[in-house]
Image 1 (tube, rainbow, N blue to C red):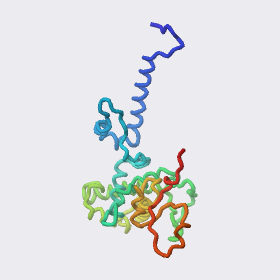
Image 2 (cartoon, rainbow, N blue to C red):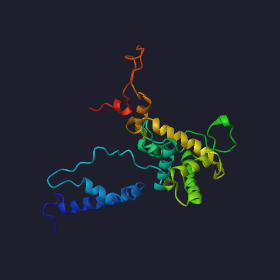
Image 3 (spheres, rainbow, N blue to C red):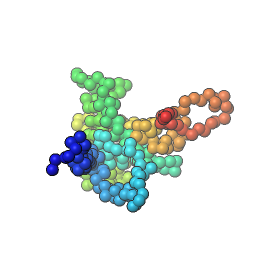
Image 4 (cartoon, rainbow, N blue to C red):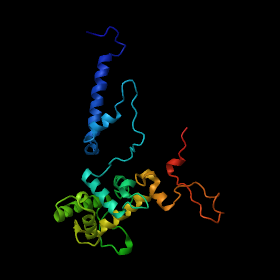
Length: 257
């Protein structure tokens, strides 16, 4: 039956549109890069955030929405997380790479202009670089890191019949040592090139500003008594004794109206 008042929206049609468009949008999100990470826990997550009757639902306050994958697949992420933890392990002094979110930092860097070598000259001819020339490979950084993580998994399967993330810490150390000492190659590239870059990224993820995905809760800075991004030291530079300051991140200087 036609609407008696054509200038007013048809509520039932609008409801159907919102219902099906919302379903489609959810399918896009869950079918994307993070689908594999989120899907297995979807029912549990829904159960946790479902409000009780008569109460409004709110998202958990401690959830870090910056920790999501932008480049790695799930296997590469798990390998990166396990490898970074062996290079920067948790001990009595503080958290390790996993707790600091280092693998997320590396993933986000690989999705950035840095990962694509956007500011580097990457055209031929290609020559073997001198040791003092730094990174001179044909591969983009993101390509080398992805290939290296896949190669570590292949190497682990060959040696231990398990992926890197599932072998023992001692076995993981042996795999990392093999890559550090060029016991294998990655697409005709010395594996030590991958290892050196991954080690640098691990340290960056532990000590960079939390803005970039690592150094969760500035715990890396706190372990070193590093003050972070302070705006000024004029109140302390004349003091003779060491001044321990609570670290500040770039976020702490954000002024919201």
